[in-house]
Amino acid sequence: MTASQRRDLRDGILFTLPFVLGALLLWVGPMLYSLVLVVLDWNLITRPDYVGMKNLSKLVDGRDPLFYKSLYNTFYFTFFSVPLQLLAAFGLALLLNQPMKGLGIYRTIFYIPSITPAVAFAVVWIQILNPEWGILNQILGWFGVEPIKWLFDPAFTRPAFVLMSLWLVGPQMIIFLAGLQSVSPELKDAAQIDGANTWQSFLHVTIPAISPIFFFNLVIGVIGSFQVFTNAFIMTRGGPQDSTLFMVLHIYRNAFEWFDMGYAATLAWVLFIIIMIFTVIQFRFARTWVYYESESSN
Amino acid sequence: MRTARFANLPWHVICWVLGISFLLPLVWMFSTALKPPGLVFETPIRWIPDNPRWYNYPQVFEKLPLFSRFFVNTFYVTLMGASGCVLSSLLVGFGLSRINWPGRNAVFGMLIATLMLPGVVTIIPLYIIFRYAQLVGTFYPLWIPAWFGYAFYIFLMRQYMMTLPRELDEAARMDGAANFRILWQIITPLCSPAIATIAIFAFLQHYNDFLGPLLYISANEMFTLQLGLLWFQGRFGNFWHLVMAASVMTIVPVLVLFFAAQKRFVQGIQLTGLAGR
Image (tube, rainbow over all chains, first blue to last red; front, side):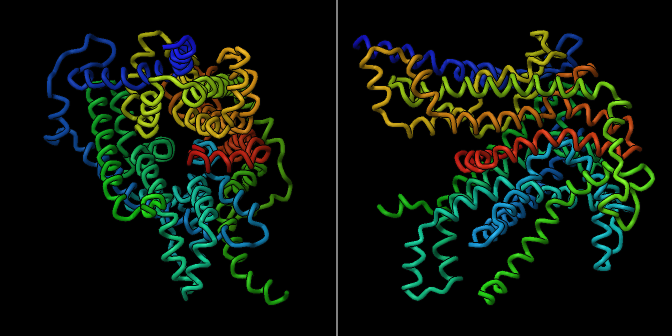
């Protein structure tokens, strides 16, 4: 090894040290520590007790019915909000991909809700969804819809949360838009010359070309929506009748309201594993529908 | 010409309707913040109040003098967090792009692995670790992690640095410049677009952080704006005109930043797919 190679090795280690240390101290270490917590009964104040599989069995044998409830709510939210968000984001991106005036303004308008601080966002939506004077019911009233109780009716809280999530599609929209703008015009021209109409060229050229972006937004969207928390914490506190008790809220309560650290860590691991399983499944299935240009040229 | 304009009409109508729906929450907030208490829940809603009550804004500080303190706290945490993100991503990004060393690919692999890890699993152990370190109730847990670098920002910086020509550092290396000087004097000035993007996103991330302050801050005078707004809403929840005035004040810095740096936002999202939240 020459002197300059030695120097580069030393500098490489030094420059990346913050990240490597961070990965150890903020990821690997805490994750291992969290595994230890799974076998403990600990309220942070008295001495931790070793309880073996008790926390895990509490999950399985139904002693915590709220776990199943929160699991259901989280899946419900993910199942509806992720596809609808993808559709909304893609629809907006298609709208903005037209050569029209005022694109920049519309892009700005569609993006702004996603940067509003979550607390202000939640506080406003409490009012928008108010059964008596909320704007949403006023608008629905124009179409003859009877007032809906939204956050006060367990049947409507989850749809309300899905609806709100549609206001936050700005970043996904911009990623789609970037993808649409990078679809090569030559490909589309070639399709037209071959006799494809606009719809066919959209279906057979545009959609495959941006399928990696669909995939990316899907993966990120699922990871995010499984960890939904803030709106439920601020707007409904998990209610009414636990209809908005999502998994992260359940974890938060167990850990920081009831100080059952061992059980909360167990719940967090379960959610972590669920998210990982879904991510892996998506990567597996990606092969069947995601189209990568570099692969097909081989 | 005329027909072309009319052909665009459906497009404009759709965009208008959608645009209004997207702005509705914000408009409601800004409009209610200027209403007297009695007219907040008037139906049908009056979007532009007849006599805008600007006094609502100073009244927020009269009701809750600490509210100005929340701004100071938030800007402190945001500044510390954002500068940590920029510095760490410069250092690590440089080590992962401009220095050739045997462990580079392994560290880059680690970076990619942590990009997608759901953070939920570390919330509880990190809290306990910070508690052992006696840092619960201080601002440290809110910004210390930024100084180790977040994978997204490092990734963004590394991608950007990869696009700079190699000859830049090679010439300097011939002259015997050390890596740190190459980073500082040659690469960093060229990275200002990436630095700006990271600074903006890190600003937003720390400014909008809710769970962090919720877990680590309990003394009222140490609240950030997010906690403060929630507290204000809890205490003065019947005064919706004031709650909205307070909300407007927490949003304005974000809006100012957004309009000042819109191009960077779009570039940043396209570079990483990083969400603004």
